[in-house]
Every structure is written in structure tokens, then in C-alpha cells.
Image (cartoon, rainbow, N blue to C red; front, side, top):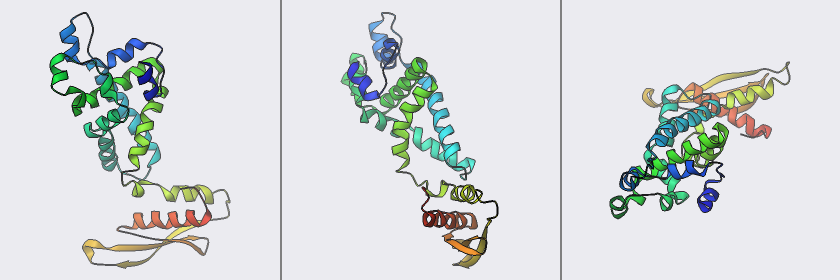
Length: 226
């Protein structure tokens, strides 16, 4: 268990929670010594995972609409993603499986690995609270987000506005300067002005996207972290 705890990056106060999270129903049913499977923990972990990911996406991508938020969250908590997380820490090596499941390749079964990840998350949550659970999950979620197209979800306009507001006499405006392409595939061009000076230009398939790209260019020119 020491090896696994190092891989998890978390030290359990109650090691029985970790053991329970690793106990597949096939093992619990076979041993029949009062040991319970990880199914209840998996149920809890599913909700804890959803809350942590939803909270992060809501706070980090302020411009993304609800429908896109839902899709992004779903891609981050789906079976394929979670079993990849499990494989990255060799979680399958530590599972307690019944003989039949062992022979059937249960340690490599996507559904079992995904469920085990959620069960371990729940065990960490019960043992150390929400912040411990959040720290554990975000170690996996943040790198995974790098593989998603979240560029359009970053709120560059708000970031720029927050900088400009430090000087009350300054004001920012966005001006549509051009449109090109057919009606079904238009490209919009927008300039962002600081008072009367152009500080960024952006293009996009809609005005909002073009404004975001103009704000991004302005932030880059200012040397701001984005």
C-alpha cells in the first residue's frame, strides 16, 4: 500500500478506505468474509469528480456556454479518460479481483479501471476532505485539458478589462472593422481600442470570438500572462 500511496500522492489516515476502494465485487463475492466491494465508493466518487471538474471549468472558462461546459466535463470524466488516469499510476496492479475476473483480464478492463479511479477518489475524499480530493484529481485533469481545444473558452476580454480598470481614466472599446467570406462561413475582424489607440486585432467566425482574439493580442503585447 505504501507504493500505491506514493503513486497517488496521498497518505491515508484510514488505510481501510483505500483497501475498500480497490476491492472489486468479484473478489468480495468470492471471499465472503464480510468484505464489501468498492461499488458504493465508486458511486460517491462519481459525484465528487463531477463537482470538482464542474467547479474548475465554471471558474476557469467564464465565456463558455452551458452546453459546451457539459460536453467538456463529459470528455474529462468519461470511461476512456478515467481508465487512462488509472493506467498512468498502475492502479490495476493493486486491485483485488476474483479468480474469474483475474483470468478474464480484469486488471486491464476499461470499466473496472475507471470505476476504481472513482472509488479511490471517494476514499481520499472521505479520508481527507474535499481539498485533498481536489488536489488529487487536478493532477490528472490539468494535463488532460491541454489536449482539448479550450482556446476559445478563455476569457481574454475580462482579463484585459481587469488590467485597464486599474487606471479609471482609461477605456476599452471593440470595433468591427471587416467581414469576409460567404454567409455560411463568415470571418469577422475586430480591433480593440484603448482610448483612441489600436492595441489588438483579432479574427473569428463570430464577433465574440474575434473580440476575444483581439483582447488576447492586446494582452500579449502588454506582456500579461495568459
